[in-house]
Image (cartoon, rainbow, N blue to C red; front, side, top):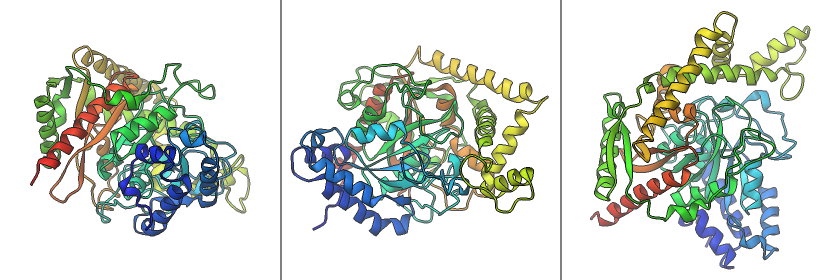
Length: 485
């Protein structure tokens, strides 16, 4: 009988390989079989690297030392904006369809050093610009819990690959909620680290002051294990912090002590879906029952977060995507009349509608006469938002609330309404603007059985604390499930 990955976690699989109870090859073959059987109905993967994965599994099985690695044999997926040497990296765009990466992203390399096996690359909104994974140039990804609904975005392919049992963990990127929101929609744990905690080297840039690479998994333990593998200073990325990397998985089980948790007053208002509000309020009551102290807090400038985010993100996107010109790498339009025509045709044909929209917005915001009025002002508001969090953290240990205002919405529902799509990230963008760590953990389901996520935001480099809170939520939910008739 074939091995069922849905019965395993990253941690249990690695332990089994270390103990000789299963091999890395068996795990890899199980993952490849799951992709073949399940992905046609999900659409999570853009490419599967079967030969490479099996070769790495064989190397691990042949080495007693390699079999003791923390992630030995664990099959994982990579969002296709992370480079893997010799493999295509498209960022979900026709612009990069012909691009083969000449090097491997630091976070991916660290996963592999720790024994993980990369099964393939997953679908995403083009250049990570979106909240539903409907903006990919190549295919549609659906939510494994309900194929008529989106998996979230932009890391929807990574979330769907884990949620459908094709792999045990995945990496995504989070610029304004792109790990946490799909984790919420797909019933996973997803973590955006502190800015500078994980290297961005080898990540296709969207908005460089906001982007972060982070892990997704089915349990808090798995996300802690993956984070321990990828975190740390990288000389190839000057924005990474030279901070010690703790063993997050061992810290997750520690008693967090007497916790003070803050809930922003405006986060449970009329804009929140009633079932999401009920699930969040229920878990907050359970946390209080477990000894945590919950108090309302104010984030006075949080109401400006969406506007601030989309000014800064589009401005940085305009700058970063200027390099795609048909000259150096990537796609080039055929038969241009001259150089200017080549630039124009390459970018018109290579970019999708949402990417073009954001480039146009960002270019306008950075243009002469508007830079200070928009981008400069947004940066000042960003500072005020960060200061609001600093003030809040003098009173509480972590901040909790909904990850998304709704559960997974139907495919196509927001496709023609960009503002409605942008508001999907209303609770998540603040952590990116402030550079803070944040995690989404499942806290319930709506009447249709769709997952609901609770977000926990922490102080800079305090990933251990937010993982401890997430573990408490996970344990409380498991206890509730066990006690149900």
